[in-house]
Image (cartoon, rainbow, N blue to C red; front, side, top):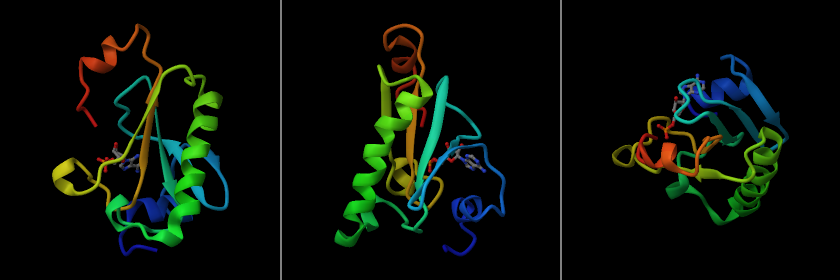
Length: 121
Ligand code: AMP
């Protein structure tokens, strides 16, 4: 567990979240400040700071999260059009130092709504 890591606290249940999916390796919950009509976060339970810090031993975990992203998109009803995004490093916009993927979608018309604000994350 990362010291004072907000996502570790969400994973342990110390901080509440609106969970959408959970298994042994990861948790998926709704982003508290959604930047798209549908916006959830996919978070490994293991405290990894960012994609820049992953190790070869994490490859199954990373593969698992990507496979689940497609399944979760289906369950959320956004499988037709979604984005899976991660930021690595503060300068890239990473505000929580625990690896996470934004799964966003649910736009009404083509990608206009999304393209209006492509860098909002
Ligand atoms: P990033 O800026 O890419 O590191 O993404 C961090 C995301 O975590 C932001 O979109 C925040 O809105 C979200 N976030 C921060 N705290 C919480 C929380 N307690 N519950 C749900 N989402 C959160």
